[in-house]
Image (cartoon, rainbow, N blue to C red):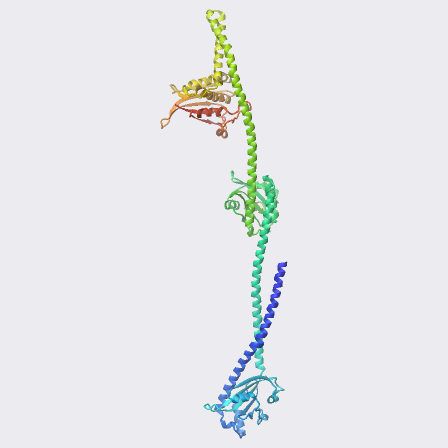
Length: 640
């Protein structure tokens, strides 16, 4: 309203000033310039016409003697004949012919003949050979007879020169015309001048008003833009406060959605987050939308269209009319014209994280195109907040995972220490058992030497010796696995090392119904290995195979010598079982320390990891092939 008052006041002031200028200029031009020059031009024209007419007729019909007395009736008749044409001219009211002495020798009014007006200055000037024309009110004595009829007279005094060579003035013809036509023409001219002046003034008023209006509108646009920028900055700050108030992504998205709609004075909107894996937009926040719309658009596939254009272009898209928007068509009734909508990319570090849609159900959307930068800034601001929340969640999850990992590793280290202690205890126990067992075995062997064949007690003593020998072999194997040794390589027979590993669990194989098939290559080259470590590696793999076949099965162990085109030779060992197998997603993690698929108490996930390290320490290679429910094969290659 204040700005409208400014324009209204200016238009009135400009009109008054223009009117004053027009009146002043009109008065000056008409009264002091136009009237003067217009009157002069018309009087000169009148003077020239009368002078030419008089001179022509006088020279053709009059003689110098006609201006000398005596003035007879013939002279009067001649003058009447010569100047009769002038008398008939419109506005001519009287004619007078003066002789050189100033006496009227002829007139259309006979009562004036014989009178002398020597004091008439116009007559005196005409006697000098100069035609004279004057416009003046009736006030002189020689005007008395016309006073009742007219107020102003146009008097023309024409010198009559009959001798062209001497140019002697014989007399003067005085013509009296009414000033009615002249004054009418002058008045008409003044009217035209006033009309032109008013038109010019009006045009000037319009031009000045247009110039002012343009400047006013420019200033208004600048003011509105400044006001809009201030509003946008204020809105941006309000949204920034909301985004900085929490690190919970759901809270951030819902609060930013609500605040953005409040800032834009809109009632409906939604925020999608982009799932890059499925290339879908997942509904994360919404407001003002019907329940069926919310349920129908939980996930939106990014296809050709507005959503894809916004994601690919990374710029907000403002649509003056959204009737063609497939999203709008699907949830808005057909009889409602929907004007929408701003589709804003939510971005962080030039990466699109999602989109925000501002909807206007029922029409009436008037989002300004000038606010595109604001929408882009809001999208970046929300995107940065989402990225911050995601980063915080990742750090939080990482912290929890690290805490769980530390707890698990601590438990595993404790378990390893327990196992190490058990190993040491087992070695000590085996050592303690071994001493008396040697005594028992020696006494049994000594007794057999003293007992003759065929005696009943000899069979029992042989049983004692056999059992003692088996116990001694088991204890020796336990001592071999429990003792600590340096890494010492020597050429060993892989087939023998494998047999030793099988022997440790052969009893368990028999109890569970596991068949062992050996496919050893004959004359297999010996390899440089640490026998103790390699024995431990094979035992771990064979024992794992046993545990993978709780209901029985078949264990196949094959060895072979192979080479490649580069003549690199190695021994290949394949240990295959028909057990439960390994899931596909777990295969990449099979050699990771502490990774296990066994139930708690059955293992800590170090067996295969230890095997991997032992094989790599021997510059060998190991990999696994497995299918869930289809068994597992470990393939080991050791350089010859």
